[in-house]
Image (cartoon, rainbow, N blue to C red; front, top):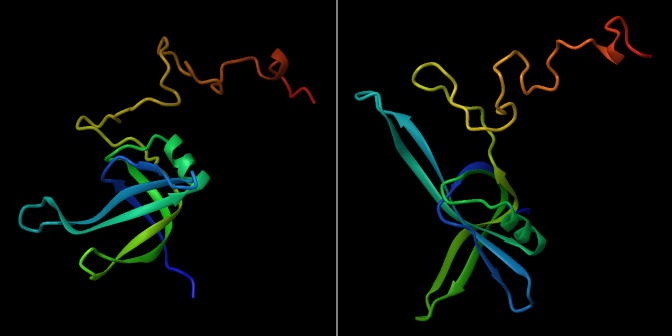
Length: 158
């Protein structure tokens, strides 16, 4: 039977931690959190209703690729991984176990800007954020206003 796969959006609870095993292989450990919110009918405020915290691990080249992604605490990430149980015996001889995630993929989420209080979209930079004169198409290489194909403006050059 295959291990259960989880595809979900999480937040990083702590900075990703890279270590190297005795063989020199990279091991990346991450602490992830997810929560469900519900609207309080009395106050109209959003409240946390359920929370999940889970440790996730990646190995080898995958761990190194995650390190290069420069993920940071609090960042929202989209994760795909397999759940597994890690079992061990503690110093007192007690059997312990914890459910962990073996990462298959992880990356930052990309969402459109949220609306600001004045109805204007809050921009965080990115494509189309270059300075300019404020003219239509300023900074947009696909904006119209040119003579068309080959400068003739009449027909395509083929």
